[in-house]
Image (tube, rainbow, N blue to C red):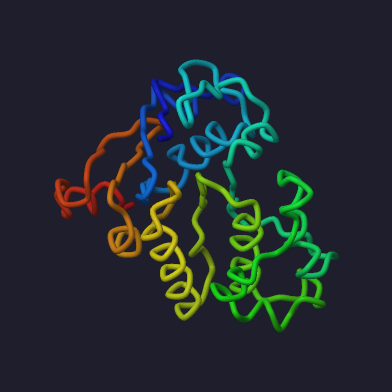
Length: 231
């Protein structure tokens, strides 16, 4: 399980997170919802080690990882798909996938065939440069690259942003399949409630650096959640 306990995070004098607590369990999708600028991405940065926290504690798999650098968290099975995808535009699709090898023992450094079962379009594009792909194809590549790392915690920051509906359905199908296998915790940041509700077992809603709602999907009042997401 991932456990975030009373975490604070600052950017200089600006407060991004205020005593935030959250958990994400193996075999489940935990979805973090909220309007723009409320701290969702900051919380993911705290979990993945991209930005240091100013207070609180983060544990993963029973170990305190609060002060571990990002690469050490990756070695412990935490993989991130950032907002905006951040693929390498001048590298080929194959080379982008192979960047996920960095955290694997040498004997495991291969792209599993399963990656192409999940994202068939990538098999036909292995020699194309990442920057030549469409936005939806780049998002599939970013998720596939994370899965090459064989993670036990997959962190996804708005994977549906700017993506055509057909690929959103494909991404939802992949997330559902990964969840059903039961060997991975998935922490998903989203703005679209319907997409989140179809996938998540637990939903947390953020506002102004705080979590204002948190519970099992069936426990939360849908109208209350939607009200907190409206502008």
